[in-house]
Image (cartoon, rainbow, N blue to C red):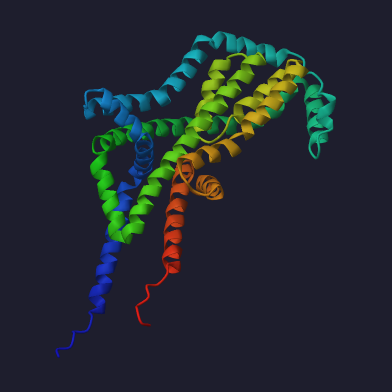
Length: 359
């Protein structure tokens, strides 16, 4: 019997190193596009049924459906931003006048219940009284040393917004390409999953798509509900530019920042004007609106993907902390795939072994 030649260890090692270097180099070259590709994949998977609905009503023309979906993605981002900028420009004089009157108006004393808040009540009340004693000029003098840092922060944020706009346009372009050839891409992904892990790999790919749709449903609907309820509260309390602030809240909620950055400054403004009753109402409303996403988002995601609620919640929060904004989609998807593979492996191990007759 002819013996097998010994394995060439050097050749195998060099082959593995070459493949590893090729993969790392490819990722390095595609690094500027990875974020946009991930976002485009999430958007296309989540909105694929919508695109098919448009295609069925546009004479089965895929090109028309892709055009409509691309325009919808552009409107989803640019309409709130355009409305916000237009409102600021059209009411610029009024905003300046309100700012001047706010700087010269007397500051009301804090309500009694502020000092009774646990842990922080006395500190808030003391800082409030110190601000009243210092007056507007004293408060401005205290803030002047931070003006340079604030200006630098604004410049950096302006650059971030420009980069965000560029990334979004790139995401829309990649999404259009994925819409155009979605079936072939889905088939390739399923074939890769089958080649990698057999039937379990195909199930993991399917569950990943369900998790993406569920997270998109949870994030989108939660953002609309929070922004809508927040805008209703602002309008009832008589906050100026409630429509503008609602658009800002919608963008913040989609970015997973939440409506608190708009709601609580509005509460402070109401108290500043001396309307303590409306301020208390808006404060309670802001607390409800700002915390409802902790319960509403996981429940909606649970409806879109049949996964344990704790797994979904851990994926959203952990992904956001670990990967940033895109992590709210990546986190649940990774946990869903890992959970499916582990559950399949455990189930195969517990399957009854076939028995032979006569044993």
